[in-house]
Length: 104
Image (cartoon, rainbow, N blue to C red; front, side):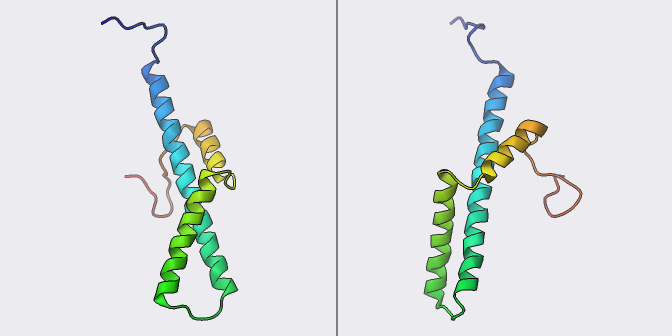
C-alpha cells in the first residue's frame, strides 16, 4: 500500500489535533464544574432552611447536569479562555510552584 505524503497529515498535525481536543474537553469539564459549583453556592444562599439528605442529593445531581448542559452549549466562555491559553502557551498540563496541581 502506497501512502500519499502530500495529502496525509503529518505527525505534528495529528498531535496538535489531539492536544486541541484534549484542551477543549478540559475547558468544557472545567466550565461545567465551575457552573455547578456556582449554582450550588447560589442554592445555599437562596435557601436558608435545612434540606433532607434526599433533597441535597437531588439538587447536587441537578446542579452537575445543568453545568454539563450549559458547558456543552454556548457556555460562559471559560472553555474558549482555556483554548486560547493552550494555543498561546502550548501547555495542556497544569503545573506551577503553588497549590496541589504541581506536575512531578
